[in-house]
Image (cartoon, rainbow, N blue to C red; front, side, top):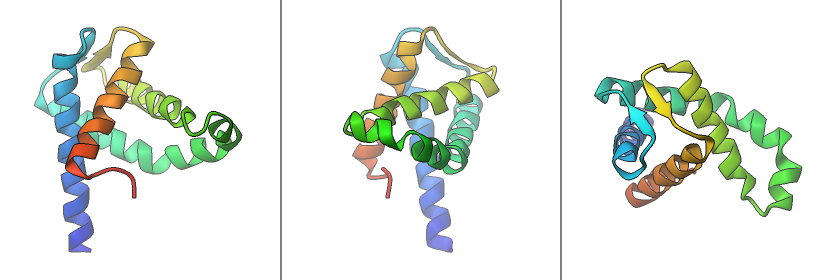
Length: 116
């Protein structure tokens, strides 16, 4: 259990760093401060554990039809939920969600914390 806890904490830190990096790479994205980034990363992890499986099951035919690209839409939707729940982060447009999702995926890929 200790190893899982360290892995989860590492994933949380990597997601937080990715969210803190996003405003520097994408104009129109605002993450308040380090506390906001931590809260957003934590909420993102929780929603990915609770909401993502349901959305993936519902959208399975579409995901198959798009050869997996619909996963990007699911990730952007979850990030939109985080934005709605936290007033300290801001995205100027819908397209910004997709760009930030890609940034998060790249950072997770660099640190080896992707989906298992």
